Image 1 (cartoon, rainbow, N blue to C red):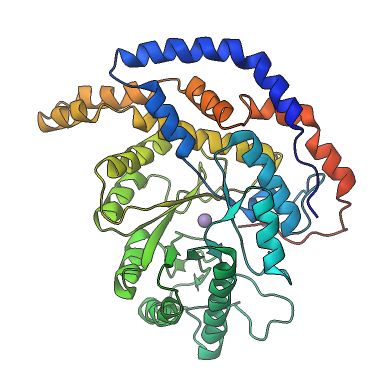
Image 2 (cartoon, rainbow, N blue to C red):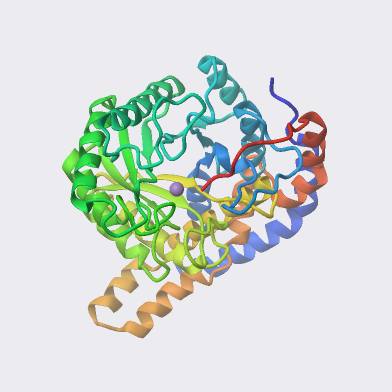
Length: 431
Ligand SMILES: [Mn+2]
């Protein structure tokens, strides 16, 4: 049963109070952009069309390997997770889809799940499998790996789980499955790098063969953790090699946190676009490793540079360019709804800034090797305050000009705390 979302009258009142200032700011920004031959209405329309998926696990409090500190009114099942996702979409209007995870979101009646999502105005994005932990009653353990395990029976169990996820996804209207494995080793010599990768390819081909015609499989690489010596799919090279070996329906997914701190992620994005192998993104930010911090919290310039590659590919109509966007963050000290709203807006911001790069000028500067003015051209777009565009896009789409203020005024979290009495233990967080 779907509970209360945000009272629409509250959004209307807040927007009415903000309207005059917003019109002024939007108008003055429009004038300044016009002098740069940028049409603010065209940018606003593109911002309105942009969407990024929310992972169902994102609306719960995350955790670290040390502890998890649950917040009040956390969703207790996938239906309640959908409510929280709907609130984010109601206010921000940039998150129309939800990315489910199995077995965490397993239900008896998937038609009811689909119907609930539809009634909340939400659709389903890529499904996510889980072979990185053991489930109650599971026959064989993933302690020493899943799709790359030395025991064929364990590999077959992991493949069967992924195929079940595809089957559930079909019923929910998904078109892709994301496969991330925790497989790897903690000690030199523990595992054969070569044989582990070959077992991965063999297992993945079983999943690949089960894909419906219009489906894709997204291979997600990760540098380290939980394996601390070697991860089987550690980098975009391994991911690309696997995706190329498997075939055209296999693409490489880039989780921004899954790289070493100094890696040039935007260049990787460019390479994957060139090879028609970019699956999409898991957006987040990090300072040290896979910190799963909120998108744009640490390095918004990097996010902008990634979007510069994406917008360029879109403008050039690169063949096979159809990236799926999702946020993948762990909210440990904030209200997950607030984090996801501000992160979605940070992602929108990077997108809008990237739309403002003067690409003709940039290319001319690149061709004449003018490094300084080339950077200045990028910075000019990056330093444009696109806030009024984002607010206007939200307002026109029926959302809130100031989502955070409306959310806090609504006391949604306090109301859910009463509606959703928590059990003593809620299980682990998300890695
Ligand atoms: Mn991820």
